[in-house]
Amino acid sequence: MGNTPVSDAEAVCLLEDLEKWMPSLQVLIINEQIAQGIHSAFFRKGFADLVRRYEKSVRMVFDGRDFLDCYPGVTLKINASAASRLAFGEDGHAPDESGMVILNRSGRELVITDGANGCMVFEQAKTTFIPAIPAPGPVDTVGAGDSFTAGMSYALAAGASLVEAADFGNACSAVTIRKLNQTGAPSPEELQAVLL
Image (cartoon, rainbow, N blue to C red):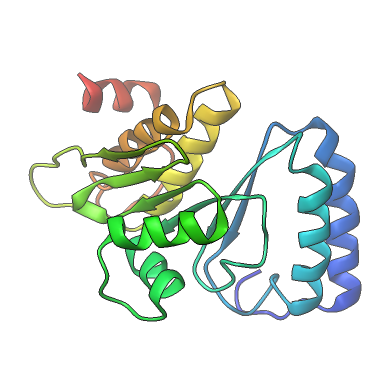
């Protein structure tokens, strides 16, 4: 929806359509990269209610920047900068610090991506660091976060643990950054080349 504000009537239609699909979903990705648009105050309230009603039957992955506390019950996948702002109200804090603050405050598992530094998975019982896969030569990071989220969510739907899913998402983003001036999902062959 980009920067186009969504009316309350449009939000109702979106929420009603989404609710029809919820019983058939295993994983739902909630993407919020722009503060305006679909995530209006009205939509956030209605969607938070939907999350509460389906959080036990549908795994929900929230990849966002601005409304990180709006949907209790989701698994957060956020970048290091957004994690620092959520935990401390400012940029500049390390992902391991930010992640522990968020986990302890919310009780929600989360994944923090940190570009070439890899990612960290925060669960109640443990914290796992997953290093980035080295990318020789020039890289284009456009779409890397989306690729990570899609790969992680795909793996979760297939039954992977959160750590296994984050590792798969890491591989997907490693393929994406090698695609200069283009976007797109990694193919099985591209993933094999990165992983072997």
